[in-house]
Image (tube, rainbow, N blue to C red):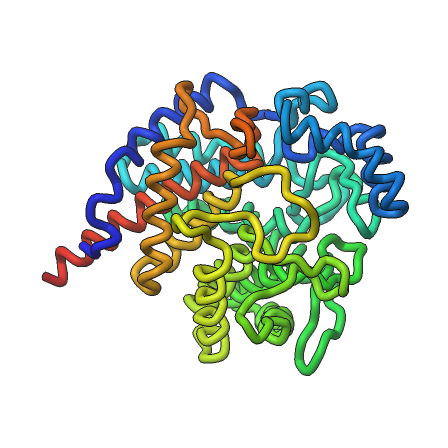
Length: 412
């Protein structure tokens, strides 16, 4: 077993078991990071912030202060909801736990979340796809509830893939086939450089978001092999070229190429790096490998603090009202588990992060804290932000470290 793997699993299994008990008691709906802005009043305040910054700052200030000092008040702004991206992460987490433990209950819980996902798809579309259950006000306009998102649907594809790898059920494969066709035909491409195309975030926008194209490239590369459909590979190659061409000299990616959203944050960086790592598994190529190496080098040198723990931004878009983000921890562990053993510094930082999660982020009831604030904690459990992501990441970490240790023992 590698140095990273040795001794890193103490307490992870117990944390996951405690979390599964909490989840069963708490239920599968929750408040969300966007609860402040999901109501008509919150959406209007956010739209004003984007369109008239001075008045907008005054409009959103009560919500910003609430999030920073009294986060429990978010429940006054909107109701609990079920979020498909969380259900997908829970399905994957339980699938990984089943692979580690062979506990049939974990398998059944993973199946349960897939059945829920089949029922919560965006019903106005021919093929399977998913988005948010609330209206989402963004800088570029309103995204209505039930609009498919390329940043949600690939996680559902992965969840069905995880279960299909375990039980081989044809119905899971049928859903994946439908998802791939949606991502190919409903999500649009726009030329963006030599041999490159940026994909839309929804079926209606003009693209430009880097992690969106990375998601689509990964999914279509996978589907092109799985279903032997050449046009998927061609579309994926265009999106991959867009991602590679927009990597900066220092190895980072801005969130978007629109000249406005030029921040660099922790979990969106992880999204891009994870996609490149998965593409390398199915379609290995030197330029993708080089981009991954440069991206990881930037990542470990710029979005961790002096203690080797994730920090939110290396290039922030605005003042940050919190110290540390659970979503960042989750995606750090997800990326580290995926690349386990390849980058020594990353392995070390992931080890620090797992230890920090176990030591400080688990509440007495088994759930995870959501944010470390400058004064205290945001302890409101939010499935999307990031209870499900932390659960999935720790389960994946457990599986990967155990698998690597087994492999090392066989080799010796």
